[in-house]
Length: 316
Ligand SMILES: [Zn+2]
Ligand SMILES: [Zn+2]
Ligand SMILES: [Zn+2]
Ligand SMILES: [Zn+2]
Ligand SMILES: [Zn+2]
Ligand SMILES: [Zn+2]
Ligand SMILES: [Zn+2]
Ligand SMILES: [Zn+2]
Image (cartoon, rainbow, N blue to C red; front, top):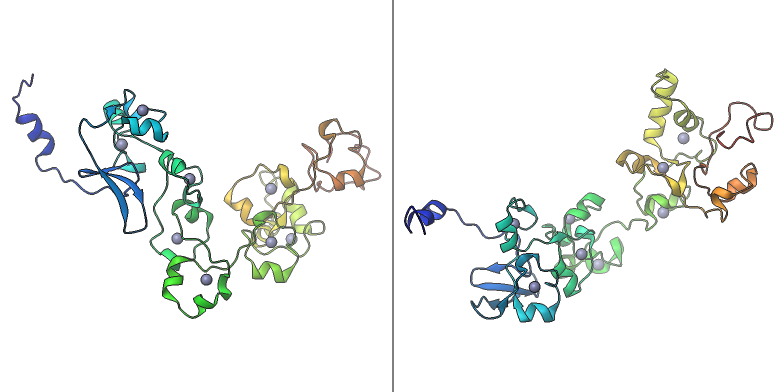
């Protein structure tokens, strides 16, 4: 069977091998002679011994689709979760993939609040943020990357927090309450609201949406053609202050820069939408959103009423 003897193949693999504990201990993982069954809190977990020849091995092994079904998984045994978790480098290795379960990352990442057992067995979740209750980073990317203890409902005014109650401070985070409407908040001109509850956008320009001349320039000049000082000035203004995005709910720009400098106000869609016959009615356009028509249209260079193209649908 072994052309190099029974000793050599083991020696090749195991001599000098540096085994480290898994970087994250997840439910369904075998840790030494035990399976991690349930996590009760940070320091306590429920385990069960790995018993050879206990339940019949499932013929689909790690590829089984019913692994999160409790009836099926108590009748058949399945391999351990890959100890490398999301950092596994063996995803191209067929044998490795059959002998270790690899779970998909939960689409909500660290922001997931589902405590349901099925969900936890089905998806991988990131580690808890090491700062625990002391973490006050509310950046979306950080919240995605790590799990966090819940935000205290009393926020920064919490009595226990102000009294330095250590136990409470470990259990809850105390951060400035962010506006729940985030980048879609209609109260962007309410100074008190904007300073009290942070928003993802930089301070709003007092002239947005209709009368900021810099923003009009910034959205209408093509920077590839016109690189004038005028454009640079408008650009500087529009990067320092946020403006209402003309595309509103139909906006497709998901860049970091745009979400920092634009406010998106969702309006009602026109019930007739692309079959709408009132596309040249200013009042109607001002009240409803239409596919392919900006909520806030670019200002026509000629006077609106004199412009001969105003009945042309492509004209903005
Ligand atoms: Zn199975
Ligand atoms: Zn793996
Ligand atoms: Zn989840
Ligand atoms: Zn954190
Ligand atoms: Zn509190
Ligand atoms: Zn708000
Ligand atoms: Zn402005
Ligand atoms: Zn936009």
